[in-house]
Image 1 (cartoon, rainbow over the protein chains, first blue to last red):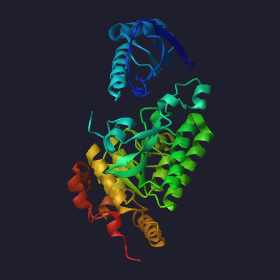
Image 2 (cartoon, each protein chain N blue to C red; image 1 turned 30 degrees about the vertical axis):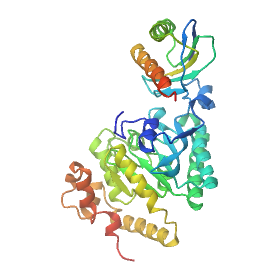
Image 3 (tube, rainbow over the protein chains, first blue to last red; image 1 turned 120 degrees about the horizontal axis):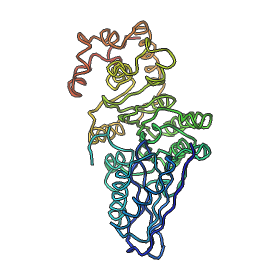
Length: 105
Length: 299
């Protein structure tokens, strides 16, 4: 069972400040999301490593929706996925952004 | 955030047990020190390899801590995972914290990593003993969904003290492993009552393998950890001989028992089936004179 790696970049976001945050666990039907600050000229870069191959278009839609909701820029998001459903992915991404902001002192 | 230890993740346990904002992580997720073996097998690899290590304080005392994440591969110990725990224990020898806390939740060796995982577990055992020999008590907490099994079950028993909840489980071969090896007639891993009375917290407490049994709450685990640190570590020849005698006495008294209920009867419980239904306080009070440590024969 080979992994699939997917990359997305969304430009024109509003830079948000915070501290590196990790949420979720890489368990069956779940995922872990790592958010780090990154100087990307307002862009949001997302890298997904998933055990479930062939769902690239669904990931694209979920990530596009995420960026539309938060417009979060200057961050790098790294995802390790073990077959989470789109709804779980969206909730984890929201949780990751909130944790990232909340960690900011 | 839940106050249940059982339902919490490794990171939530650290946050719930230690003094607020005192935790500093070593090799955090952003460092991406992941398993090279899982990458070779093209399997998903967690950023922290399923274990969180670092330093912090509990009731103002400086401690080092490792917390295994049962949600990632059942908390199984791979090469990197084991090395993180070992490195933390070796640092404890040098830096002399008040204690090392091991929040164990694991099925044992990560089979995908074969010999590297086996070596990692044996290194953890040696490192636990090194820390104790250097005067640092090692306190184990067990209360997660996956229990503490395999080589890490042995590692747990190398520690100064074990704190367990009723939901916690401690053993060598896990229920499914026994059933696979010996057949369902020998051991039915889906019989939850059987599983818990064989490897569950209450039985392990009655046998003297766990020092403290607590209700499933973060606060209860925290208070028990604080008390265990204050108890210190008795590493004397006398203590070892007492432990040896307890084990010998146990084998002699219970060696022919087929079920833990037979053991409980021999320990003086008139109605062994009532044990499972007791709440923690009631059980601890009733166990005062009905556990292996208290009923041991005089030498």
